[in-house]
Image (cartoon, rainbow, N blue to C red; front, side):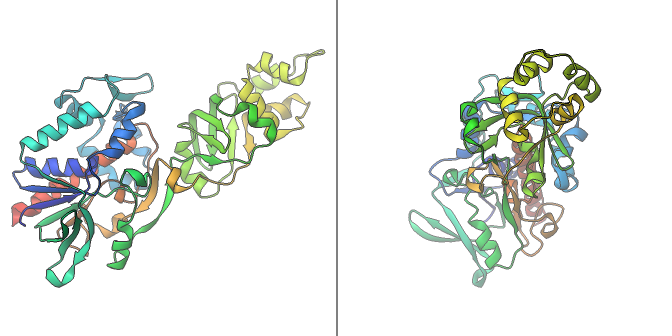
Length: 396
């Protein structure tokens, strides 16, 4: 075949195909699953969070160590461009109180349908149940595919790989491509869970709190701080308020919770110094600190017996240590860290050791919290790789 081959039918792959088609090139899209965008559709079931409306500097900071490498891609397709792109596909959007951007319909399916109609109209050739099995180096680096009609060898002029990470395997992101890369001598940073729940071995006393949210708190791990909500579950803690701490927690950092983040330590100490008479300490905390039942339960679980001295109790409320056993496994994580290191790629996301092969999306070694950052990162890197592949084709 001539032209471009895009392997992977998620947001990164579709965006790469879009860029190549827009540049006037023929594109074949291969997807291992029976349909496209399966993880994209699953993510949209709870409300498709497209991006986060905030200044680019703040947005980039959420990508941690990968921010410098991603800076050119996210600058070329920042949150406002993501919004314009979605609106161009007929999706009306709204921005929530926290800056998160959603379609009014809250679902991913209308956007995906409109996008596929656009791509089909530009001539996209797509094939389902085509699984990439590697390269045939005896035939000028030909691409090998396993298809319903048997093994197939393709010889595209450029290839964009957008095969996802290693979470949500049932939806297509199974990470099996890493074995192909390793077998070909290409570097892959080992996968690790990101945006995953935290393992906590609760006592039986916490059972009554399973399913209860911890609201209005601040989570601290290492140098990272996150304000948000987490849910107490039978296995530990999980939720968007905890996910930004994944890099530190994965590295073994201790977790502390500020149960009163909007109250200064001195003010808290003063409140706790009020006479409580015959009230239990639990009732005293409820009344003078407005501590929720879940917050009180967590405090008792992690710091029993509580100190009576107001200053010591206030210090606990501001930095409650929560013992944990690390993050939940990869197969329970929303996303992963690890993948193809940026050092193995040129400025256009082309593999230095495989000219003409580009990598995009969650195959790359980056991570970000939920809240629109993951999807924007996939779209931006897919667009970047697709444009770079198109430029290579233009040069002949």
